[in-house]
Amino acid sequence: MTGPPLPLRTARLVLRTAETGDLDAVHSYWGDPEVTRYLPFDTLDRAGSLARLGRYFGSTDPQAAGDALFLVVEHEGRIVGDVMLRLKTGEPPSVAELGWVFHPSVAGQGLATEAASAMAALAFGHYACHRVEAQLDPHNDRSAALCRRLGMQQEAHLRLDWFGKGEWGDTMIFGMLREEWSGPRGS
Ligand SMILES: CC(C)(COP(=O)(O)OP(=O)(O)OC[C@H]1O[C@@H](n2cnc3c(N)ncnc32)[C@H](O)[C@@H]1OP(=O)(O)O)[C@@H](O)C(=O)NCCC(=O)NCCS
Image (cartoon, rainbow, N blue to C red; front, top):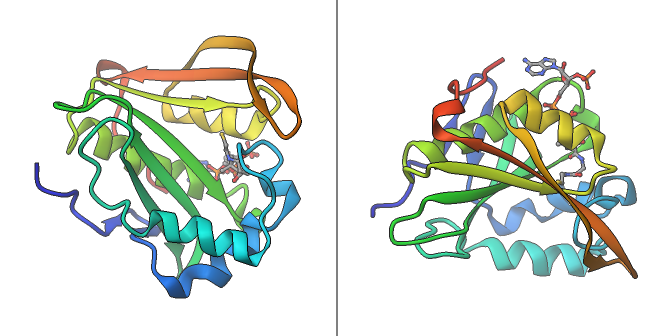
């Protein structure tokens, strides 16, 4: 399969592969405890952000189960967040997991929904997946609301299935099938 058509463009956003020069921008929110509260990784110091960013440089063309596409999201020329699409199955891919992290300064404008919607379109279109899902901490109300705006529905609440940040926690699973997808959401 050829790689995805990058960068992705929406009405207000450009979603592109990450570069070394993006470190300051992503660290400005990966290093914020309010942002990482419900994420599976701890709040990062600068070295941690550099290491995390470095792991994603090759994440541009997922093919096999477990491979990811990681894109930073630009709005009006500045990075405001990042999104990820991870294939859960390969050959052919049929289920993709989506993830999103945005800078608090742009909350409440629909930018995360717009970016996530572009990734869902990629999953159902370019990767021909039949299912898209997201996993979240049940306390993460904003992320759950984003899932619902995308058209996902809550399918599961797993109890104490995941150990992270020193304690066992629950996981909420949202999902959407191809036939439930009503198309990309713009501004
Ligand atoms: C999860 C996260 C991305 C959600 O951000 P968000 O700002 O709530 O989401 P959006 O950018 O889609 O904005 C939605 C809001 O903009 C409003 N909005 C304005 N214009 C809009 C538009 N054109 N389209 C959609 N929503 C729009 C919506 O009504 C909604 O408002 P509300 O918050 O008052 O309900 C953000 O909270 C975040 O990055 N959290 C930290 C990281 C994290 O937890 N990631 C998820 C791990 S599972």
